[in-house]
Image (cartoon, rainbow, N blue to C red):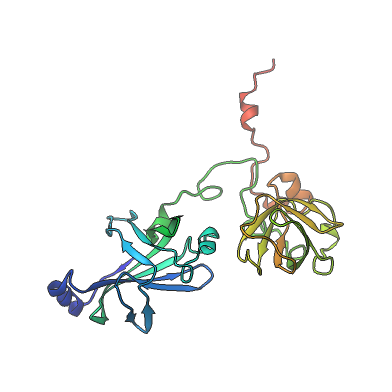
Length: 295
């Protein structure tokens, strides 16, 4: 999305193009935190915000496309360990972040030549450098969709458990503040205290939280989502699908959500939500289609 400049800015740009231009980027992460930096060699203050010349190395050419096609632009910089850290990049903190790009005259930053809004599609890093790819917000309109939005049929349900389409009520079995008691494996297995992990009778069975998730709210893994592949109720033990990025510590807090494998029987028996099942339980599978005809 681009906002065109006014007449005064156009006149200044006509006479000073390429002389005093500076790009100021305000990156707003999904958690609301902001990162301000510029490709100028000094601090630039625009509209009450100070943009720092610390981490930004260069911007690639700004490619524009007609219609609803998305234009990409790469931003390169340095992992300085203060503004941008390696754990932040590992946790994909800035993936999907909104970028507000201003083009200003660093001699007269009060006048903004143009404004653009983009989103960060991906970030790669190597050693002490990173490269982020920004895309126009129109890229959201070009993404392929599935399920009920013109997609495909599937035996398993494609809805997210507890979403507006699923409509299953999981508020009672969601543990909002589970506190880590012991850590049998610092990256793959965690046990919660019985006082903080007290589900109702429906959740007091083994593997009830299998296929669910742990959303870490404190500790080194804050914001990370860990899928659950096994659950033992007696010890409140959750076994994770993939290791966490940082070691789990005793006292860490998390939200534990129940899981669903997408099958019709699970929807009917576990959540009593058969009326809102989003799959096609009567559709033949690929192996059924390939079976020979039995006469």
